[in-house]
Image 1 (cartoon, rainbow, N blue to C red):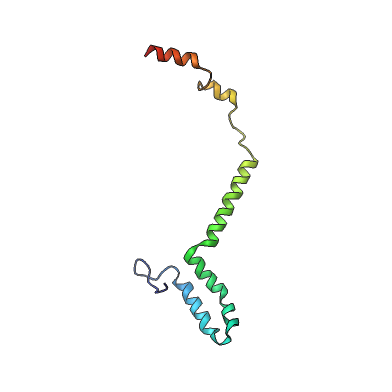
Image 2: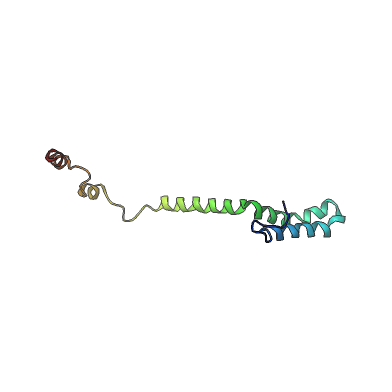
Length: 103
């Protein structure tokens, strides 16, 4: 788990956080349960380094907020139905049948 060796042989990315947790436990070991509570922030940092849950939650919240903002303000330059028809995509069945009959 916290051997200190990374994938490429150097120190692992979360090893410094693990050292902080161990140091905190060593310093506060005589205080019992109260000492463990003092180490909670260091342990949370270590778990965040391992699993990135807080970062993933923040990213998800930002995506939701972005989607809400997009839905609240529709595109200003969105094409209207008449403009789409004028592109030749709709309402041109006669011309399409003429082209197909020539083939």
